[in-house]
Image (cartoon, rainbow, N blue to C red; front, side, top):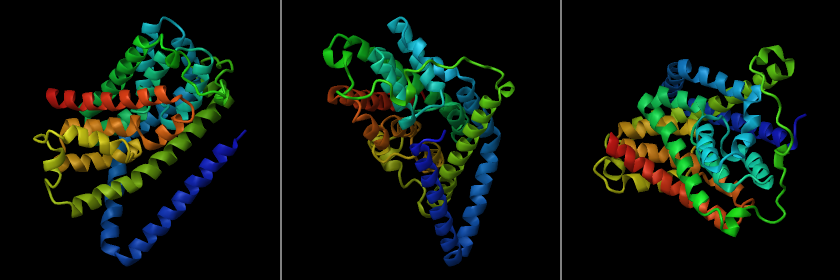
Length: 337
């Protein structure tokens, strides 16, 4: 059954599509030639990324429909060290991110799962997933896709390890604010069995199709204006205009990328074409990676969602770990490249 939040999300998405269509038609009437060239660029962009993005979307929908994600809590309840490693690895490739992971994390904490593996998953999951890996490879190259995935895993590992060291502190042992539900989003309910052959189960087939349709709409909604922005940025931004700020010779490139990428969050898909354009204009690879990672793990919307759930100290610890991990990823990638 659809929830009120699901209905609100659909209404909001339709409203965005309507506004985007209205603005696009108005601009096409006033500026027909630039609008035509931008439309062609957007269509070409979708054609170029489709061979890699479509398989990632299918994998993401299958993971959700098969019930694999429903057994994450079992992974987190084992040996703490193994749990942190497992949570970081699963978070780096699981198609849950941002605010969508909040009910699961709240339920796990309320059910007694230690904060260390939960923090590891919380830090690694917003950065990437199978569809995001495919999109990153298509737009920025396989090296950047691998670096981003490794950065997600290592940030989760780093955050989980730090929290494990602080595990005996009372505010770490009880990180939720008083009155926060311990079964948010049904996280305390028994996880469904894993069914690999989802096509044999009508309910799971429907789940797969619904998730695939939702993912398709999200990617179209995010990438369409992003490709358009990339084209316009290339038209109006002089070459090497940003090299002095985020280029390889700037000592402030990585910090600037992190502290711009974190508060001024772009959707992960929407950020890819923009990042490609910025790299074409002088952005260093490390700054680009730091921008992408920080935009995912320290998004303003994600922080606003987490703040009412976590006590102040765990919340500030999350932000500190996310920023430190993003900075480290950027500096390390610049050194390697």
